[in-house]
Length: 144
Image (cartoon, rainbow, N blue to C red):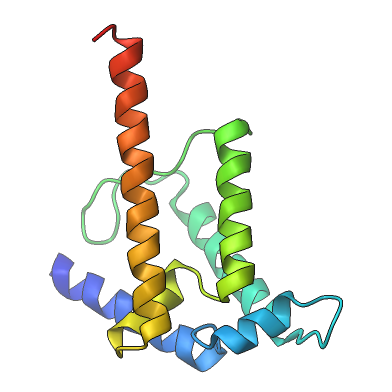
């Protein structure tokens, strides 16, 4: 049941990205180009997503289990630190240059778009590098 619900949620999310134009890098870059031919249509998509997300978080705030029985694990960190700022900058620059973020990258890769496959490979390489560095930091702080 959990796998079927996950598949359905991913399918709805992917179709939503396609319908909203978020899987089209040119449309995303048009939205991010505030000084040029700005396309504000994705602002409505983002506003809708924020509204739905805020409602879902509010609904689940006092719950301990999801509808399918999995434990609820909402983020608790509230601090804004250097890694968060640097990660946000890297994400924003990558999104601005490529017009792709992780969700649309999976959609693009799913139908074989080279741009999506390259972005996905770069994203996985960046994640692996981050995990390697974090493991190295933990080992150094533990005195190994």
